[in-house]
Image (cartoon, rainbow, N blue to C red; front, side, top):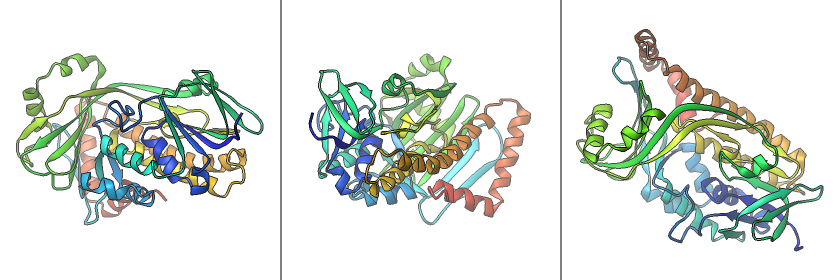
Length: 386
C-alpha cells in the first residue's frame, strides 16, 4: 500500500469541495477527494451542481471569500436586502430589511463550478467515477475499498456523500428520521423587472413557498406541496405555473416571462446519531438534512465544515478522536438550534384551522413591530449565530 492520505473526502458535491478548500494547505497536499459522478468539466457533473438556487448568508459569503471562491461567483449572485414573510390568505406580514445585504442567492451549477475551479488550483488529488464499496476502520488508519478492487488508507475519512449515505449505513451509523409528507418542486423563472433584492417566504396550506432573487431578472422558486399531489403539479403547463406564481407572490416585478424545467425532491429531516468516530467524521447532509424552509441547510453545513477544518489545522493526527469530539460538541449546538428552528417553523404553519392562522398572523404582525427581536433574527439570517 502507498503512504496513507491524511484525509479522504467521500463526496464531491458543494459540501465536499467546500471542505477541501477550507483545509490548510499542508493537509490539502495529502487529501484525496472521491466522487462517483463525472469530473465537473464533463457533460454530467455532480448531481448537486444543478439549477437549484442556494441562499448564502452574509457569513457564508465571507467564508467563500476566504476560500478564494467569491470573485468568480460574484457576477452570478442575486443580493437579498429584504425578506418578506407572510401566510397566504390571511393578514399579518413581517418584513426584514437591511441596508447591508442579508446574503445572496447562487445557482448551484455556478456555485459548484466556482468551487471546482478553485479546487483544481490546490495540491489535493480528486478522482471521479470512483465508487466506494466500504470502509474498514483501523487503529492507525482506515482503509477505503473501491468497487474495482483497489484500496487506499487514510488517517481520517470524511463522509460528505449525502443524507442517504450507504457508507454510513454499512458502518452501522443510525439516523433519526422524519418524513414531512411534502415534496419541493424547484425551478427558475424570469420576470419583466429585476427582483430588487427582495426575497419572499410565503406559507400556504400546502406548505412553505419561497421566491429568491438571482442575478438580473432571474429568480428561483421552492414550491412545497403535499407529496400526494405531485403528479397534478408536474402536469401543470408553463402558462399555469406563471399564473400560480403571480397569485402566490404578486406582481411587484411584473409578469413572469419564462419558467425553466421543474425538478422535485421529497422533504425529510434526517439526523445522524453519530457525527464522529475514531478516524471518521460526517459533514453536510450526511450529518443533518433539513427542510428547506428559511434556506439554512448549506449555510449551517458551511459553518460546520469550516470549524472542522480549523480543528484539524493544529492536529498532529487528523483522525485523533479527541479533536473530532471537540468539533462535534461545538457543531452540535449550532445544528440543534437550526434544526429545531426549521422544524418548528414547518410545524407551526402545519395547522390549517382559521384560529391557528389568525394566531400566526398576530405573531407575524407583532414581530414586525418588535425591532429588538427583528435585529436578533437578522443576525441569524446573516449567519452570525453566536
